[in-house]
Length: 493
Image (cartoon, rainbow, N blue to C red):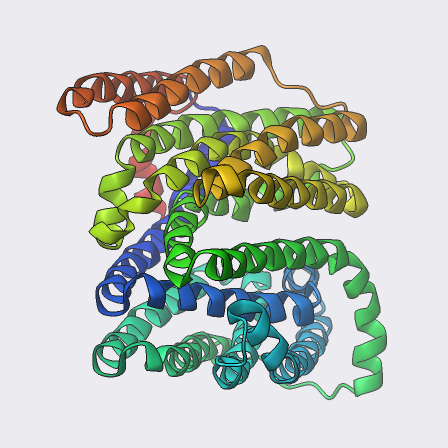
């Protein structure tokens, strides 16, 4: 391997650029989570988690995969010399997103009573859930504007709007929660939705995109092909959102709303904070993979390179989170949330299998094997829900974390088999060695944190494991990346 390998350099650069803005958003989110935990407690965090699930469910169900397909189509039109075609494509997606937003809001109102009954056993929250319809509408429209900016490759504008939306949203919600408590949760969702929309709308209007007359019939007919492209992704996302909603409401009904809050705290850390690495890499990885979808050798090379960097970056983060899960929960929330530490550790352990399977899952999408992608997602959530349900009588809340681990242990070989059949993909020998070594270090960190977390002397083996992991990651990164290139990144920007 050469230090000046341009592919590794591009992976790291795209991750740092996109990840930088996301880190700011995460920090703002940490402050927001801390405020919510202190002012509203586990019950407030639990209800907020249910609200997020409701909004995500209707956004996924009524969004129809337009965000994923829209980025691709708008980017293709943007690269052409025909600006009129670009403007017509944007006009079409604007119409689709508006219709989707209205449909999502109406659906939220229609199903407010059944959702309330399922979540709490009665219709106590029905009116609040109906109020979330405004947040659903704003969420879908905001997604539409972001999709257009991303398709036009206005990534800096996207990043700025997201950061500003998070910052001003925090300024809006903090005093609201302080004054009105739990009663202000729904108004807070509506207010932050408006703020996010205005922020992204500002940068959208700065593009000075001319309006194009487009009939509803033409917009509908030309959009049917787009629906076919995104349908598998949206169904998979919808199943995931529904699954999380089922878990949260089951905990709320079987234990109490505090249990849902504890689960939510562990889920946020695992799937938002740690998954930042994957989201940052995905912005560049998937387009690159799609461009070489017909060349098996190049697919194999790129996916192995991406897996290499993921192991270098993610493994130290996983070890750190395993060793300091109690501390993370206390800092991000309050000491009351330390009861979720075991759930968090099990989920973080499962995250290692997630990062290994993540690059391979994109092969199915790049090769237009949407049905295979959907199948693997369905199996994952089926195993997760079934495992958590069967283990719940014995392990209680911890069953959600153990089920998460079991699901990804099954998901990894399943995705590998599909990827191998589709593109002849195999891991390189050095990737397998890296995965095994990191697996040993992560397992050692898991048992150190789980068995000796109350003992002060556990700091010594924990520190040793973390130092070894960091040194190993450093030397692996040094093999493929020249640190002197960092100054060129800043000079070019």
